[in-house]
Image (cartoon, rainbow, N blue to C red; front, side):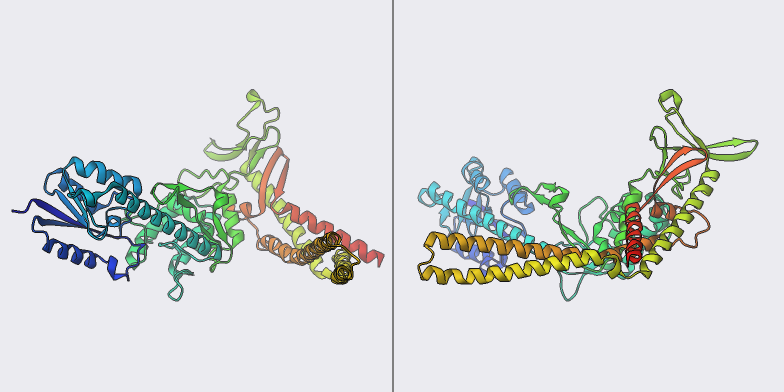
Length: 540
């Protein structure tokens, strides 16, 4: 009767070469079968297979089943192809071989490594330790190479994730390139539009569910697309939630910027995922087609930073939510509703009050505030459009003539110096050969010329960049001015116009308020440029 009841343990990692037949599960099994033919004292009673599991960690399902069989006394022998199949982590593998297996009277056999703990010479501690160290070092080397390769791909703008974000899918031609999923992209655009229009995240989620729009996870499952598995929402009937909507609204990837490397692990031996700081994320602009314009994305981030309290029904964010500030104490103004004689009155007041230190608290009716803000916004829009049109009518060459001329003159001067230094440097070696310079003098002069030439080249690059910035300012001006042009025909104030055009509204008194418009610095710069252009025309 066989003395040992054995289990054959077979393991293959996804990181190993599946084309290498010597490491395949079938080959491991065949090797063990051939070995058992010459060992009648061993009876094979079970087979445990971990296909696609790293040897670094020991929480593999089949490995745990094997250990349970050992604990229950069902097997007293473990056979593997080689020691690396049991594990590649030096300390933990050694613990199983030297402590756990002996404690249960388990015989361990690694065929290719000639390890058999039933025979003292074949279970030599030094031999096993060396093989364990080599296996551990192999895993470390593979981990470093894999991380480096992924880092290079991320910096190139290649997508290396398994599950693309909702709105994108992997290109059929290039699996490292994201392309727009038109159906999902339309939903994403609707979400951003609804947020800009004043809806809360919860309201957006409720509307999507009411319309029967599948949640990102449910959509991916229904289309057979890659999706995260094992999470609490990993089910086909997962619904939209406020959290899902907020996650989409905050994802920079929709602007065409690929953001990767947000998470990581301490090393290849630990599975604990850590969140990396924002500055360590890898961002590549224009890595794929944008679904959301950058200015709309930035506007949504601004909106989400405001106090976005909603009406009791949760349908809309209040018109001035997050924007009203007490001109006396700086506190956020609070919206209140009163009913007098059956008529409802809505007003804003400073919550601090005189009792708590606000010397001039103001109470202002909402309808009066709305009319006042509307008139101010309309007037500012006219001013912006007027300035933009005047600047468009004046040649950019005239406006920037002095600056551009100065840059061009300095570039010409630097080039002349470069040419002159180049002539001097070329003659150095000849003077050295003729004995007019010793070695130390030659080296000192050569290094000095080289350093000066680098400084001049760097200065020329900076001057060119400045000239490009002068040109780009025109297109940038046209971009922010267009924000105001879009509301040129506005007759009623809505949330979209308020959050797009206004930074804050400071309530000084019932008859005075100070509005800080968005792009105020750009507007002031445009006025200064217009004033400068007019002065230059007068001089001419």
